[in-house]
Length: 170
Image (cartoon, rainbow, N blue to C red; front, side, top):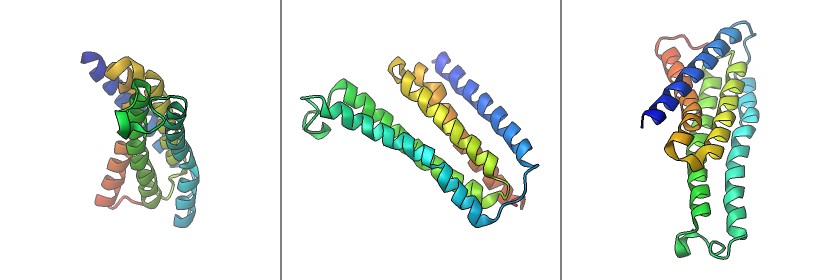
C-alpha cells in the first residue's frame, strides 16, 4: 500500500511541476479569442478520444479472437484478458470524459490556454500509456499512470474554479 501512495504522491508532484512550468510560460503568449480557444481544445482533444478508441478497439480485438468472448461479456462474464481490457476501457472512458470537459473549461476560463491544454493532453496520454502497460502489475503498477491522468484534470479544474471565484479569469 505504501508503494501505491508513493506513486500517487510522485504523480502529484510531477503534475504540479509540469503544470506550474506551463502556466508560467503561457503568460508570455498572446490572448486568444474565445471561439478559437474552444476550437483548439476540441482539436487537441482528438488525442484523448484516440485513447478511448484504442481501448474500445482492444476489447473488440480480444473478443473477436476468443471463442469464449465472441458472444459478449454478458453471456459468460468474459475471459481474464477481456475483463482486464474492459477495466482499462472503463477507466479510460471515465478519465477521458473528465479530461475533455476540463479542457473545455480551461479554454473558456483562460484566454492564454493553448500551451496549458496541450500540456494537459500530453499528461493524459503519458498517464494512459503508463496505466495501460502497467495494469497487469496491480494497483502498485497502475497508480502512477492513473494519478498522472487524474491529477492533471483535477488541478486544472481547481485552477479554473479559483480563477473564476477570485475574478482572475482572463
